[in-house]
Image 1 (tube, protein in one colour):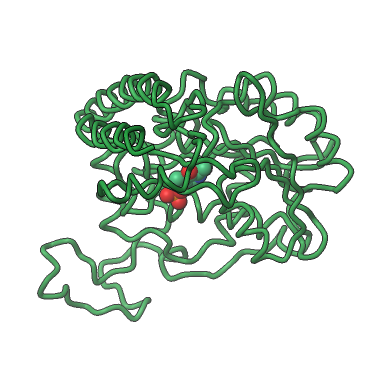
Image 2: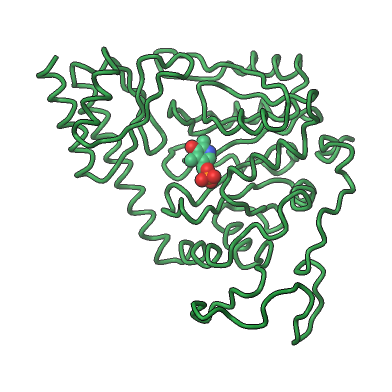
Length: 360
Ligand SMILES: *Cc1c(COP(=O)(O)O)cnc(C)c1O
């Protein structure tokens, strides 16, 4: 019976990582084992920032596990989910050999991490159809097999295309590639989606992992807190590959505040507002003559095709509105991605694009 540890790079299976003072600490009241300053800084404000932080604070692990429906042992907290992506590639893929599979057009960090590790990048392009972009599941599985992909990144809801994958499709991919690849579902926009989380598929599938982040719906992009949810044995290996003190103590405090009940209640209200604004914008933008197509979205953004994306981009900039130019991405030569802002910000977008209509 193969387990997920068989997919970890051989030379890392019994790698213990850096033995930091914090990890080897016993109990005591005089701490002279880490060459820290014995005094707090004059600016410290009672935070005790002279001491190195806990590498994986149990309170935050528990709070994230409760939020996402896992056990604390299935949680690895990192500096954004970007760090988890990089750790996965480094721990699973041998340079020049084990491939990473992605589904372009898609979020660029998977390819960046693959490039940095020197591993082959396999592309299973999304197909654009009347219902929007989607993965060809059979073709994806065949490609992963024929190129010996060790890691498959699925983005759901997908950035920048907006669609969510069906859970049946995710399960089929993970099951088909069991023993061959770890399948990672990036749910950075999960809060905005109608689709339930793939975490529910994890029991019995040790090669299925999920990425979540506090950077989007939880309004904490600057604190850099994200996590990987995966089998405890994989979490343990990745912990050993991670930097010794990855989580700044003030950021951990901010994350705990964001996960307090009152903060979560506000987040839920704001997610509901973004979802209703997303629908308002989809309808209004579809009626703009310069817009050729608005893709349905399960995220907090819309992907649009324009009759002339260059004019639209410049018109938005002239109105002070900065959107994401997607034209360099495959299949998106006429597309821009627009985040859903506050209702007032969204009105600015509509105002700028209706003056495009007059100018055109
Ligand atoms: C924004 C985003 C992330 C978030 O990355 P963090 O490092 O957690 O800020 C991850 N994946 C996708 C697809 C994203 O769009």
